[in-house]
Image 1: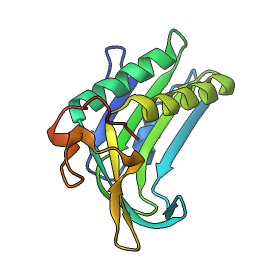
Image 2: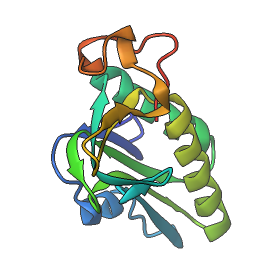
Image 3: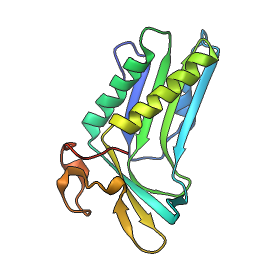
Length: 166
């Protein structure tokens, strides 16, 4: 999904994230700074060994919210932004999120990247179902998306009040 200016792209994907493509999307000869943040699946959480995570999303809403976040964060500054969030089953070390930004100067790129990342974590309807080495599995934050049981898929229902994106 691309905004009207062509300077912002957002995507929810089932495929591995092509980080080189994400970085190319923010290339601009007038920009002296380009940053790429990668969120990766780590091997532990709160003292428990993690085998992997299943990410679920309300896709249309998630892509629209990613675009909205990028537009709001960029404001009227010259910037290019590319956001990609992966869904599905991911293993340790897989890239789950790519945030690429470019601006004329580094301070703006760092600020923009951080702002976007924090807003993604707070606002985008994407949920994590973590699998542990001890055989247990659970939705993170103790929230079951859509108000269903832990095995229910949040992508089948809209983001419900009380469901906390992570």
